[in-house]
Image (cartoon, rainbow, N blue to C red):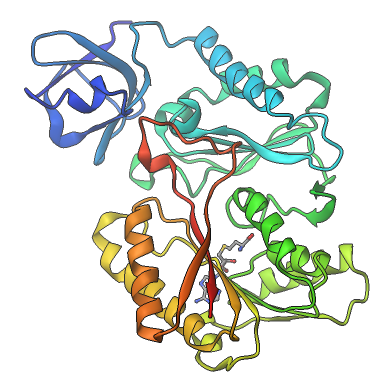
Length: 394
Ligand code: SAH
């Protein structure tokens, strides 16, 4: 089949020449022939030089590049790319680790597989497709996972009904694509967590906070800890494990609070040091006085696209100001943003502003981001989506 050709406007080839894997719709000069969402296309500069091959999709990001060399995108290509992603995790020691059996197996652009997220929960694989191109190749991806993971693979669950672009009008139901599994208790740094990949948020767990939760453990001994936007209570479990005197978890979702209590109970049966509140974080933070030595703020992505960036930054400013104003003297604030459109600088400036409003002296102890199983593609700064600061508040 003839592959559709896309030619870019003069000067619009620069980002691709620097291996950034996105072509924005405004950069396109001409599309030759018929084109459909999810088609594989070849991209050329204005002088007919090949730039890359990738998936086309109607929208602001028109092409997601799969390869910067002129090659066929066939079953062999998918197999090679997925093997590369798995070998990378093997090299880093993620397989056969009794202390930890949950990690990200494929991280989209970070693994040069834009549009594909695969998380690994002790042999259960949960997949989220973000592009029509990936959706069209779902069978090949499943076959490759079966072949490459072999006996380690317990199930493959597809959870893409909300991640595929709704404009594409794909009728997709979530469900198992290979076997079924109820074996959903995982281990992270020795702690147990129950993962609900069917009804939970994202693929069921925020794996990307693993190392940051581990860091919190170190700062929790004998402390009063407040975990805001707690979801499954990951930070709360580590705080308890680190010897916190008291841990409070806050999430507006009653379901998240139930999961938090369950996870706390899995690790610290009948502990009286933990309490969870199903309330709005903005309300809760109005009046916490100086009860807490350590506060974690890990809100959902306030901004999903650039148009709402300003409003999102206001949200970060508000919650951080409240934390700075009330945290105990000598307290420690863990504050995060997981919005891809909020840059590191934007986030840091916003937290600075919040600190200044509170008039407290603040020292930066750690600057955090996502862990190595969520690799950052050096040519794609957007893949560094998780930003965090650990701050000492005098
Ligand atoms: N810290 C978590 C991940 C947080 S995800 C972890 O380590 O796993 C963000 C969470 O914020 C979600 O669980 C969502 O239910 C919750 N949330 C969203 N808006 C909220 C609000 N206004 N008040 C409280 N919680 C909120």
